[in-house]
Length: 323
Ligand SMILES: Nc1ncnc2c1ncn2[C@@H]1O[C@H](COP(=O)(O)OP(=O)(O)OP(=O)(O)O)[C@@H](O)[C@H]1O
Image (cartoon, rainbow, N blue to C red):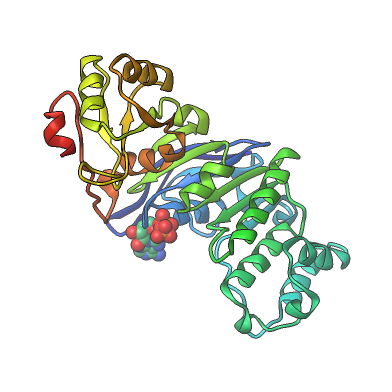
């Protein structure tokens, strides 16, 4: 269990983390999401005692990190995979940690195996490691003590697709055995696939927290059609609000146009059928849900604005909007 309780951290007059409160529970993977500079790393640093908070407190397994007698055994931490002496070999890094923690020497080979670093790679110096190899070594370091809690900052950074899949399975296995897993990431798809719970942060403040299922509930429906104007009219008549999904076909294109509708697929299908409109696709918008939720929740805190063309059924002429 991890609890972050009203944590605030300022640098001069700048508030990097502002009254942040959330819980990461055992047996679950909690995804910590936010735009660049939102305060994710600072929060994780407070959690592991590297940055003192100005106000509030963070606890891991009911204690402050610095009060854990042998933290490596209880909590596996990966904050910055490059923060190791470049002249040491991977095996040396792990051996130092293994001895410090009082673990059997066999743990080093075990975790090298787990993260897929070969004997030969473990003998190379870190300065010669690729980004993905450093990340794997960082994970090996975090897993060394077979801890009950994992705190990982951007763990998928630099991993190839097979590595990302492997990491996902590894974290799922940990959580299924009752561990608490907290991971930050910008990779929304990764978080969407792996996380049970989500905490979204923007400009230092928590803007949403809860189970992924609750937060993404009501994601709506995506319907594709070659008759977007007619469908938009039918949806407007049925008082169903809808938007054009950005970067999909527009009138004049050969591709069907995709609309996002704030209603379930059954209602949308019935509305289209009643109006005699053929749909080429009808599906829950879950897949796009996290990205849309993330951008909407953090819109005020994004440095890169994004243009969303709106059909805005109830306010704009559908013909004008999709033409
Ligand atoms: N030591 C420091 N001194 C001054 N400002 C800092 C310090 N550490 C962090 N900050 C500021 O706090 C804010 C939050 O930074 P943080 O690294 O926590 O964000 P983040 O959400 O992890 O971002 P990213 O996704 O880009 O890694 C940023 O504006 C950053 O510049």
